[in-house]
Image (cartoon, rainbow, N blue to C red; front, top):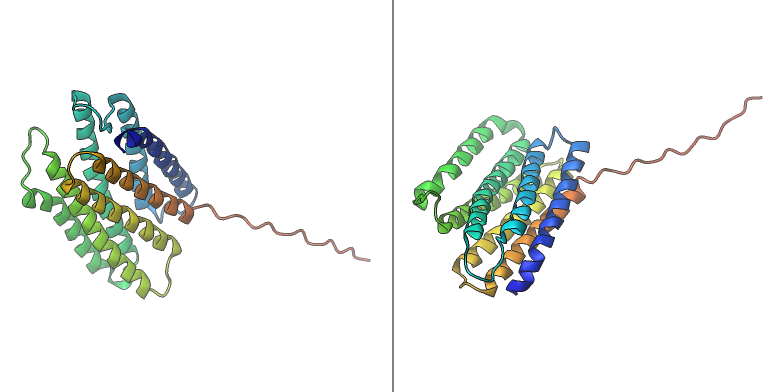
Length: 242
């Protein structure tokens, strides 16, 4: 399984990169102002995917075979720092979407959401007590990612509730919520299983599951923001006046 994942990981990275690139194009051609936060998040994901894919090819960071090297440790630091940033952006994304559908209570809900985002930034340092050498240990990154994704999953349920109660449900926000739910749930499950699993082929299987859920989320978002086809107006028959 580990050797299979070593071959498949760059392919999945390229697939995710293509899907994210399409998303950026669709958002730029479509509802850019309305979904600016989605564009911001997707653009960062695209940049991170390209960077980590090239870093993986150069440093062999995701390989599960052989001893740890300085190159693989460098890749691990890049991966985990980027992972926490992505998880925080997902939390901010779902918070902004809740604010968008809040209706008349936007002022109060905006303050609540701002406080929640600030709390999620501070909580990992209070709960998990990182030791910087100069970076925290992998266990801190793993726990922080689980916390952020679990929090985003709960916030996504709140978003679903707001969309269900709304009389005018935005189909694009609904699709973003579905994709985001798959993304954060898949990430939480993968991180949780990877945290308790012994080293070996199981780690590669959990990483594969994580990559596949990410790709599924991007494809759902691509479908949501796919440019609508323009209807061709049939030519009107010319009426000749006598």
